[in-house]
Figure 1: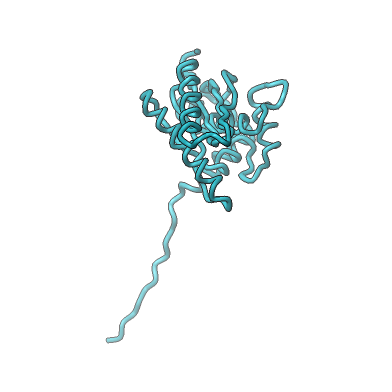
Figure 2: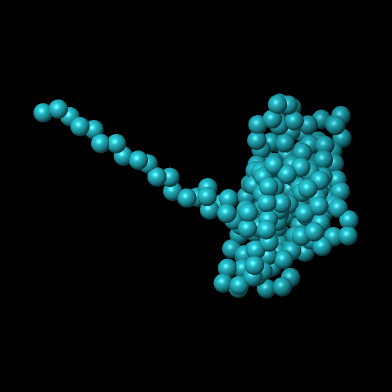
Length: 202
């Protein structure tokens, strides 16, 4: 791996399909695909077996590709309670595997990830797939969408990490990266609170 290149494992958690993607990101923010795939578990299997299958799959990717950090989608509220529970359980497994291997871990919301790779926080799955393929210079769109989401997670994390930035190198941001950077600055800007003078009678 080139010096200072950051290798990130992105995990799009799910019980039936858990997307995993590994990318190398250089200081100039250029990225290279290392690995992409989906870990599947049988819907009719006991929950403990399904989680064990996901854990084994993520461990195999970690051991095979040696990422420096694991980026996982942050669980958010959904109308389908069973879906969000499964996502949360798979997310916990990914974070556990990171801890087992002494790796740093981070979570990012879907809107953060979409804004990072497309410049639009409400982008649809096709738009994410298309931009991931363009960023990684792939001839075909990464399939299924879970795999593309995992790669997007990895890219999102790398671009907001010092090792994945090119501050001081003079490299230009892509439109998507610039949109994300602008959104991040706005979210971190201090809020001004107005003061109201209260007069009291003598």
